[in-house]
Image: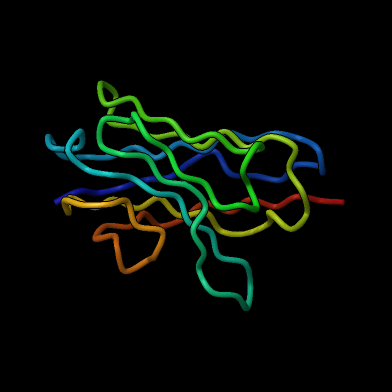
Length: 125
């Protein structure tokens, strides 16, 4: 069982930066692949980024590639999402997710077993 708690959201102007954190409980955190998703009002939850359990491979949605960077610190049981050059369309609730399943990293919500409660990111124009 893994419990996830996101933090770091807030209000920022377009072009600004934020760093989200996701703290995980559980001794087996290092064996879980991790992902970030986001959900804007009236829209489906969508994939943002994911990282393999060792942190060696990361994947990004095309909409954030080159602006967002995901990383993990297994010693601190934490993953991060550094968001730069933020745009108003990045406004959403951001969720951290985890999966212990073996295989390719998933970009779909059904590929993850554990979810955090979300943190709001608002980008003003």
